[in-house]
Image (cartoon, rainbow, N blue to C red; front, side):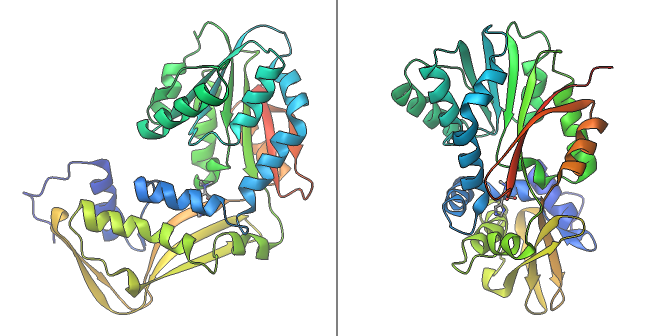
Length: 324
Ligand code: AVJ
């Protein structure tokens, strides 16, 4: 047990302590992402089973003309913000198209990782020298406050990759609300939502036979081992995925294969696992039009437009502030 002299210095430490002393146990998927986790997620995006990336890529490519005409409806300069820009591979389809059409905009990618931003800035400057880029490092919530209502130009905010799917509906609503609060009437949000589909297709995307998703899920344990001096034996846990076609919720677990005790030195915490006890690590929510309409409405937004890939696996929606 943890004694009073142990000070939990980071949010990660606090959340690990809370999650592993809770019943049932949980850890947050936001801690999958360090240098190793970022690389594993890149590998996931390249897997044939992980249809999300290809679907969104094809939507952007198929509909870039129409998207450009909506973003640029008044022919006035605008700022294109992007939350969680990552490597910008999909966004470059739009950047290239806008640049070729001489659309007057600047690109403002936001990411938690300064390293990701530096690489993105270098590659955009090299490949698309006419695109003005200004990076902003921080979490979504910090930087949303920074974007502010008072930004001089009209704003378009991109949020790709169905990253919203990591949030439960109430959290997704408050996140959408905080985006809504920085919008003026002519501003837009362009967002990706993975759709409900054949449950097998979804399970396969989160349970690849090559074990990449398993390694990604277990990376949170690796991080606890290295950053908090823990002694998790990764082989003693199973990666387990479930999908509920009724609610559209995919959930990831790590399941203890045996009775075991793990010690996390920095937390001075002993964690006991019974055989087949679980740690819930991630939700990846799947949506349909009804649910997206409801979420948007709850957050004071309305759907202006939507785009889909040929299989209707995935959709991108454009939101505006609701006219009261
Ligand atoms: C980056 C949150 C969109 O939930 O599909 C991929 C992360 N997890 N495989 C998703 C993830 C397992 C991904 N998001």
